[in-house]
Image (cartoon, rainbow, N blue to C red; front, top):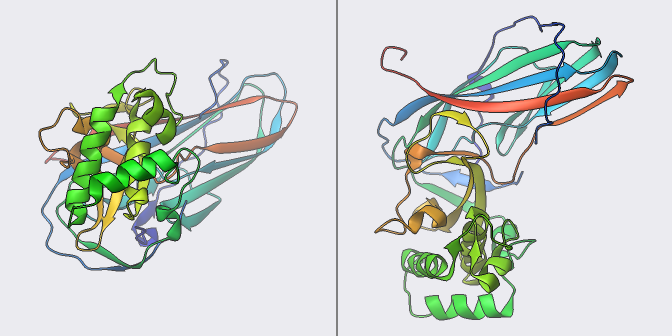
Length: 321
């Protein structure tokens, strides 16, 4: 669900730093929903700052020019799980574009001298697990019921198993619980799995995978049962999120649509260790997008640039509030 947050943006200008600093760093690695929203009372949740820091280094003795960097939204604004309260850019973007996931910022620099370093940040103030709100939609995007790469809801065996699981279930909740229980029984988590990051069918057939297989198989079986569902990409840790949001806590989970409850988050991977497979800890999940969004950059000239984006999460204390 997309909420308009352009009016939340405050801009503070800080001159772009040009510092001679050698070194090489690794390069950093949307959807439309029509909706009507009905909200109910919320309760205060966990307040955090999520900071995206972008560092550009010219690692050669030649100038680079015409640098364009496109930074996707860092945090989704979602009713019921997380709410973006403010966005601050430490360096003013050249332009911004509102996407279903939030504000995409574009930065352009005419020249990056040899050995130069550019740094800038985006800071999101976010309230996590802010309370129960109901989202209802006039029309669900048809893609959330269709097969796609890695979500093989049209596979004959997946379809048959999903329909058998949900045949006598009267409610969406009962159907989803049956699917989630099957997924965690079918799969074993294995970082060395040959199915790793290959999606629903690979996980179903091999019985192993990582969060990608757990979430993709859940979504595929939900769609095969006529329940709209989608993947959610972000960061999560069952022991709590704080500090670097890096590859160790990069995560994918799912959302399904219930006509009475709206979009509901579920984490099939974490459900394996829960007594309630439908329980979702919104305070320890940060959703970024419904696709695996990454920063992109282009430049010209003879110089070679490294572009790195790093995210960190910092709790906002009572005193800071």
